[in-house]
Image (cartoon, rainbow, N blue to C red; front, side, top):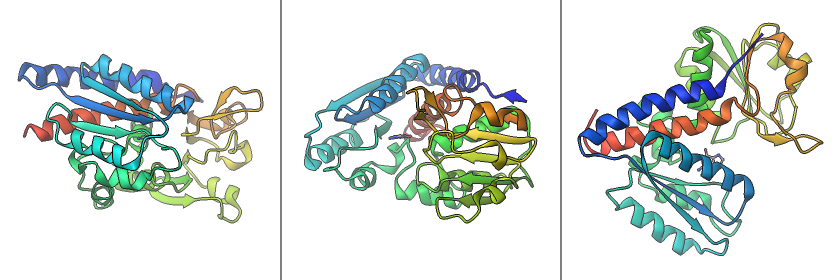
Length: 283
Ligand code: GUN
């Protein structure tokens, strides 16, 4: 069994992005990312801080808009409109979830698709569906990079995704399909889930329940990718996979933390770079 080092893979991606950023800067272009955070959700604050740090590492211009929890939809919309029109800003990211009085969908739909570095806008989601995209969704794209780092060829493999969210499960299945996997999406209503997950050569867990995937659900020699970020009974960070019990059955497995998490941010940096290139007619 080998543990996939998400920190190392993400570092390599960020270094590549930094090199390309240096080339753009030589042409007078600095990629710029705006991150909006509303309210004081502690997990979101950590994610946003990590995104700012990654911008610094890559040499990007970045601006954080930390808005109070009582921000109105109109105020948030006005900020998005302003950033859509700001030439220094190539990518706009609104950290989710938003406080309950605000509408995620309204904000996502308002971001100019060419600045939508999360790839959440319906135009970008549709582009991913037909395989003709500018931006890949960050977490699923990061998962694909981790799979590539193992050297395992995805073509013809059976891939099972647990979870059907718009952010991870659904686009993850599409990216695996683009690489010629035979893909099955499972979810909370799936009957006899272990009988399905046991068929997986590649298993991606994106459920949001601590240590949900147990050894009896995993095929011998599977590649197991854990997208979960939960707290266990002792308050310790853990994934959706019961790592200690599952690891010896796998050929490759990602840890939590240090697996998928760092990749999401690295892919956000890549999308921001892509956005800067497109907006400056560089391809
Ligand atoms: N909240 C959890 N993951 C994400 C993400 O990838 N992007 C945004 N905008 N919010 C998130």
